[in-house]
Length: 591
Image 1 (tube, rainbow, N blue to C red):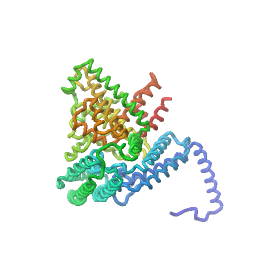
Image 2: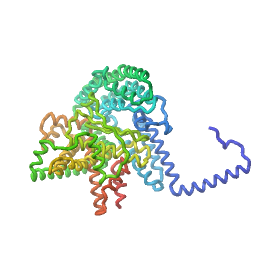
Image 3: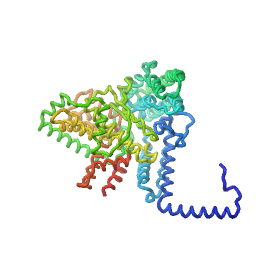
Image 4: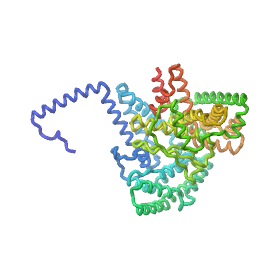
């Protein structure tokens, strides 16, 4: 770069330059006293971390930014990245980041930057705590594994430019090498004695085989053609050529990659232990605590968690029993089915947007789409999920419904409360409109996001009463939520029992029997699911309890001045953070 300081200057010009430097220096000093320079320095560093993290894979980048070039981020070739098997360099990176973050003068940062700093520090510290336990991590899984999510993420890969189409095709070509890195990681796990059980292996293989069972009519072919047509910037002949190329890549790259994954995993059969919780592995309890910290965002001691969960379970169970004792007809009505006036998902989302206005801040001009899970993936995906939009566009906001999962009209209504309003969609869009630091979008604390959505779901049960055709509508809605709360609480306690206490399936069965769940097949399915997804239920329910308890604490502090809408507004502006950070900034508003 050409540097003007290398040019010779006349004395007069040098004097003017020195004066200019002096003036700027004085101004800079004054601004520094107000923390401006420290804020600028911190924001620059936070952006550096964001750019490093978001560029780790093309999928990560594209789902985060629709137009990365506008942010000055470019990539040479689309890649899915690899599964890292040498974690020491990763830990060193977090150690370096933590040290740099600690170098900033906290008092000179704005409140917004203090919040980001607190979140980043706890994130780096938490990631470093994984050390020596990384081989207990699992990227595959029947419910939440990458082999299940990847087809959906690729199928939904949005096209904003012609480059996005070529990137998408290159990503498909990269699936074989990506799966090879997964197999290398699984081989390392097998050598260390932490490979999955044969029961889990069978469930994963069944899912992989379902995806490739009819290659010539794979759903990705149909979706790609539809997306090209919707893109509307290339001719019909070019679309035809691209569709042929896409089919060729799918048949010669993606399908064989899944076949190789199946073969590679099959070769490791018998190398894992029988289905059991993390407590049965060396370092398993410590790894479970890491998951509670990193995925749930909770740093509450396990014993206190158990006590709080047990208390809630007893409270809800007593209330449920009392309601049924006082109104026996409620049970009959529940068995016969609640008559719910709304049945169309779009109508439900419209109704929810109106219903939440008295309790939540207004959210205007928000668009969304409802889509349905493809038939080939119905058996393996959740009842519904929200696909987050890129941070630089804020759209599209897509809610997926799985028609395979049977749900009553009221259950669908509350499910849409969880995924839509005032749940995930509402939470993300509202937070996005506060203009947060880019790095905040990448720091997803599951307990905060899923806990909020479950809290929103509990509110949706309250709103549902308005659409129940029955004089006891409010009681029917409330007892339905109690039933849901009891189930989630019960499974959360099971999660701790299995993974931290080392419960066997027999012990889990004894616990479930107290709640009338005795069918062997059902008990086995519940046990297996929790074994495969440690802390998953806690993200939802322990997260929910944190918000419920924070609400109670703030109500107590504010007394008659408590404003529920304001309480929700503060939480939404704080965004997704670990619960110690959430509590710090929320309670501060009520001091």
